[in-house]
Length: 193
Image (cartoon, rainbow, N blue to C red; front, top):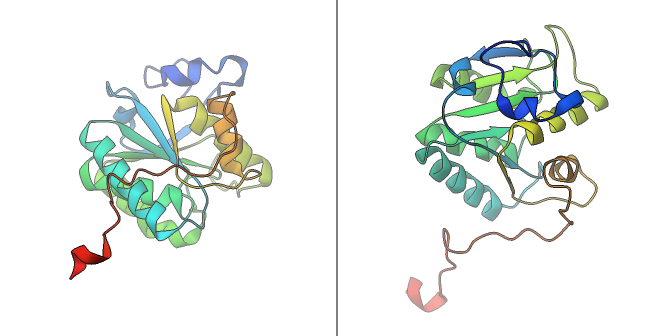
């Protein structure tokens, strides 16, 4: 899909000189033109069970409201965002490699399920391109670029999540994750008796 294609996302155009000239797509490309907002659900690969449950539930709610949930198909935060979105709608994976491979390989099943579900995977890289450190940074740029909003589940100050966050919202400062106890309220010990 090139910069001149009608499927090219308007949010990518807003990246100016940082916009991809073209990218590759596998799956339901009409999601790129669907009249909805794109929300990135991102965070650490090693997240707590609580953050995983909250991320899955938030992605599900967003998909019910016809938001397309965006992630990088990484383990942890990205995985729960993709899974939760597919329970009620669609998701978009932005890949750091060619679309002929899945990194990490543990998410191959999820990738295939996404394509079967009518979701989408996109990449700036041609078939055969293995991910490099630089391609993860470029992927983060596209996640931030396509997103109208960003949900960070849990993160360290120096990870790729903060890179994406800074690209998406330059004024963000590293903080402890703030997860809503409304969706999964703590159970009072007396209530479980």
